[in-house]
Image (cartoon, rainbow, N blue to C red; front, side, top):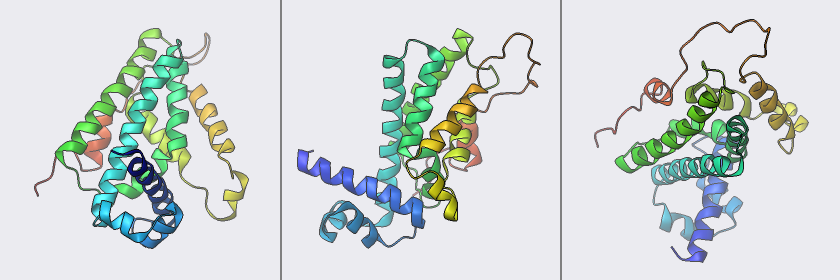
Length: 214
């Protein structure tokens, strides 16, 4: 992909993510055009319909999520610190907030399943390393981290959004939650035993375990 085409795609996808998050999946595509600072022809030439845009945006976010997990491992020697870095990176991508919106119009194909599987594998390795190091609670799985991100990263309603214009409060709350995921300190009460939620648990619950017939 040429550099100018790549920049154009990046502007479109970033704008689409924000517009869909703010206005829902049925938001006028003209809003994305204006937010991206491009001409309508540029959008429709690349994405002839809303479905193709949603599909590419989802694949892009999953790919960037995988890169965030890989970078976390590279930057942090401490396994739990790597998990923390990854969760904050996912929040910056607004993945947890926008994924519920995208699921409303997402059509899963073989390529998207491939991207999803690769991303899940990379993140699972990050979590397994923290479990092996004894720093992440054994009852925490990837599904738990995804749901935590979804719960905390959804936009604040109404005037409450003014309390967190730059996302600093979100990241503070993520740190508070992540501190609760570390293995318990000596003398703490043992957590109630439970089976960690896996990524496959979430996929199944979302009713998208396989490629649909088309």
